[in-house]
Image (cartoon, rainbow, N blue to C red; front, side, top):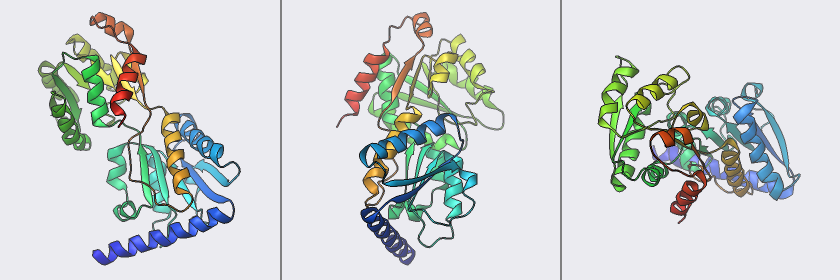
Length: 312
């Protein structure tokens, strides 16, 4: 095990030294692999490119395409960016047999999905990193405390895959004087778990788990919560439009720009930093739902309060 780790570190070091020398002498080849060629993935990729081109115009040879278009690892790029989890999986597999794979930065990927398939050796060696799609637990619970200071019991629905969210959320909740109530969806289905959870909580926090929250279930979950007068906090503006009270999220452009910052810093031959949460974020409020609950909330004010708490 120790020998494999040392080999991985040395290999990554040689790889990064090579890319550093290329950066110093000329253009650098960067592949940007998209999980989807439009929408959020294209927006994130454009923001990443803009961030780098603003600082180093004309220094990058870009190749941007759907991940499936990269059928061969040759000619090998100096760096790879994957946008979305499908692209991450495809790029990691494409270079799996390469003894010196190019560094891979994944953006707009859910944390748990990334951690399930990320190559541990490459993570340790600094040749693999990510900017997550979802928000850090502390930021989520801070928003709840600021927006709804009277709330004490927060509920989450998890599947077998997303139950890994619970420990970090439980710690963040405890640190803020909140009680986290977790209900796992099992073979009996989603709605028995939801119906047992709602009477125990004052707020429902949605997690980016497609096994629980998806286009088939979201409307029914929102309806059931609303009937109980339990507000729902979502993870995208779409949930606010559908009836959630609040949403905390990072836009594709914000995630892409942060990815561009990390890549720009690493291009001269430095290791990638550890995977991280997005730095910038946005808050959305459904004013009709807030009014029905007797709440007066302001997106700009709430967002600024959160940013102040995020500052070191």
